[in-house]
Amino acid sequence: MIIASLLDTDLYKFTMMQVVLHQFPGAQVEYRFKCRNLDIDPQSGRAGRQLAAHVSEIRDEIRHLCSLHFQDAELAYLRSMRFIKSDFVDFLGLFKLNEQCVTVSALPSGDIDIVIKGPWLHTILFEIPVLAIVNEVFFRNTQRLPDLLEGRRRLDVKIGQLQAEGLSDLKIADYGTRRRFSKAWHEEVLRVLAARLGSGQSSGEMSVGGGQLAGTSNVLYAVKLGLVPLGTMAHEYLQACQALGPRLRDSQTYAFESWAKEYRGDLGIALSDVYGMSAFLRDFDPYFCKLFDGARHDSGDPFEWGEKMLSHYIRNRIDPRSKILIFSDGLTVTRTIELYQRFKGRCQLAFGIGTHLTNDLGYEPLQIVIKMVRCNGQPVAKLSDTPSKNMCDDEKYLAYLRQVFDIEQAP
Image 1 (spheres, rainbow, N blue to C red):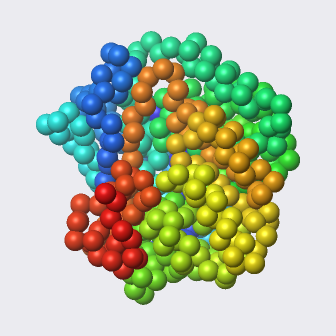
Image 2: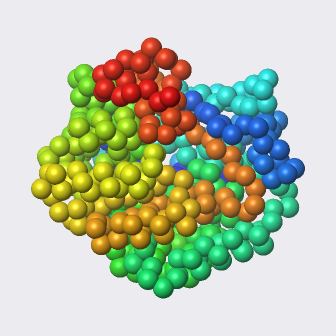
Image 3: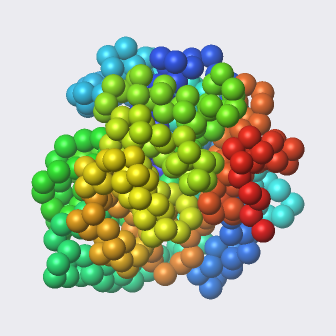
């Protein structure tokens, strides 16, 4: 089966889940699946409308996922992290995913519909493994003899780029679990990167020392390969706070304050693109600038975003060199090097590369996501600086959200 451990997910699922346990244990949520690139032909290496043909296989894999529980050694590993609290690990010791919370249906278009619905505390761990399942089921049926030699050649080129003169301080991290070609390929990529680039030490949102591989967002491979697990918060956390906070306009600041209350200085990276950069900067006042270690970019032009963040710190009388900028939006190695060269020496830097590392064998990857669309019965959404990343079926709510946060609608 594809998923053999509940640790085969991203660290930020556990860090968010701990906040949910302690602060929002009664929240009810709904997630929905979306494929952003439907019209792809698998025979030509382009993705194709073939997902519906594999619904039964996907359901079987999810059924197996829901049979898993945390092993004692896995719980001990989580307990060793200083920001993971003992009562949360005790809860995970009793935890299992509930298959009744997930429905997978074939659509006439050839696409599939996946809906995850139930208590946030009991559904938050579905997203990453379900996406990994959809990816691997698709590719093992459409690419039965994958061109691993081409994948290794491409990986070798990337490593050569990173080992070029003047880039020894450039660190990358693997963020590729959700869109990986397969779990076997994911592990091979990480083993090669660790062997040839070296790996760092520490935990949280950055690593220190070591080589150019800062770590991985995948907790299982962090354990298995001795890498640093990396991650803080995702969009769903800030979206849920639209329904959980005192009022909508304050939902972003409420999310950051609730996070700081939980982690007391650990995991201090703020996600900046749930309402767009302008709305983020309005809320990210001197208090939050000092409270958080830095910010993560995940939509819009990364160079423009970086310049705005540095200027914002300077305006608030904070030395940008003391802050971390993390870039994680569809990065390639080439774009990562360009960003490093633009911002090196001006701030601390980290780069999370996903699909370009774990699904680059010559076939077009599936652009699939699972996003929270409702919390406690009301719509939630993000208004990204990349409009195609927005996902909400309630246009009235989107219009209201734009009005509340003074966001112009993209043309």
